[in-house]
Image (cartoon, rainbow, N blue to C red):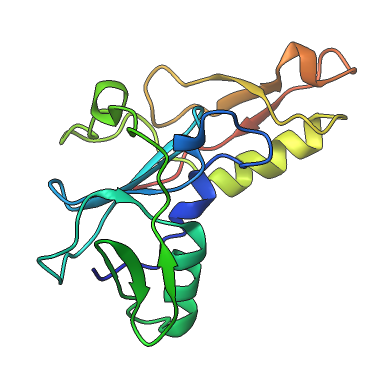
Length: 175
């Protein structure tokens, strides 16, 4: 399969802290030609180009994905059947972590209509760093009613700041 340069492994759970093993590695879904990763709080679904008809659905190790990108930054490739083989690189065991959660039950494809709002996630991250005096990055967000002209109001979630009354604004972007 040919991978994109998305860092799908960023969406998996940390194996040191996660008891649900199936959330610690990305999952190749051959039927829908995609790789899925989730830590139980976020889910990432990225299309993949299948090149080998012998590729089968199952877990992919994050190590193998990273190695494929290192072996060929422009077009990372690997095969995934009984094991994971990085093109021009090493071979890895496929993790056996049981059944992956039914992601389509929880995550729906974005609708074909115009999005409700567009904003820069990096700006949101910087704003919450400016507003919160703790390591937690939980926020409360109020979206503008019309989705275009008003700012997005942001404040630290109650448990994430010891300074009551801190808030800020994030301006929507054009799509």
